[in-house]
Amino acid sequence: MRHIDAQYFDDRAAALAKFCAEHYNIHMSINAKKGICRIICAGEEHPFRFAPAPEDLTIAADGGYDYAVRAGIVPDLFVGDCDSVSARPHSECIVLPRVKDVTDTYAAAEEGLRRGYTCFELHCALGGRLSHALANIAVLRRIRAAGGEGTLFGRGTRVRIVTDRAEISGNVCFSVIPSGSSARADIAGAKYSGSFLFTDSDSLGVSNEPLENKTAAVTVRGGEILLIIEDRH
Image (tube, rainbow, N blue to C red; front, side, top):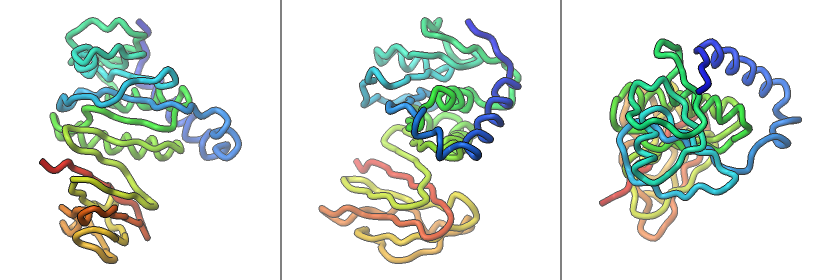
C-alpha cells in the first residue's frame, strides 16, 4: 500500500489549479481521458446502473469499497484512511492518514483529475452524513475548477452544477438551487416556467417537473445553480 500525507493533496491541488489556469487551452484537450472516472463513496448505498468500460476508472473512497464488493465491482483504485471500510482492499491503494484536510472523496477526485479524467460520477454520494453530502458539492466545484464536470448520485437522486443549459425529461421532479447567494435562470417546458431570480434566502426553485411528454430546459442567465433531479415513484 502507498502511504501519503494530506500535504501531498494540498500541493497537488495547488499545482493542478495553476496548471489549468495557465495551460488549459493548450493541454487539457490533449491529455484528457475519454472515459468516466466513477467514485464510489460511503454515503447511502444504492443499486449501481453502470458497467465500467476499459477506458473508465473506478475509485472506491474508503467505505465505498464495501459497496463495490457487494455489487460485484472490482475498483481500479482504493483511496481512503480505512476508518469505514471493512473488507480488505485488493485494488491499487492510496492509504491516507486519519488526520487530514480533505475528505476521502475529495482526495479520490484529485487522483482522478491527476490521471487526466474530466467526466466524473460520484455514486453513493448522498444520504448518510449530511456533512459529507454537502462536502461532495465542494468536490463538484473542485472538478469544475479543473475543467471537468461531475454528477452526484444518490438513491433516485442526481445533483450537478449548471452554469449554462440543462435539459430534464422523464418521470422526475427537479429543483433549482443557487450555488452562491443568487442565480438567474429561465425555465421552459416545465410546470413552473418563466424567468426567475433564485436566492439563498428563499425556496422558490424547489419541486418543479417537466410537462407531460415534454423536455424541460433550464438556462442559467447569471451565477450558477445546483440542479437536483429526483425520480418520482
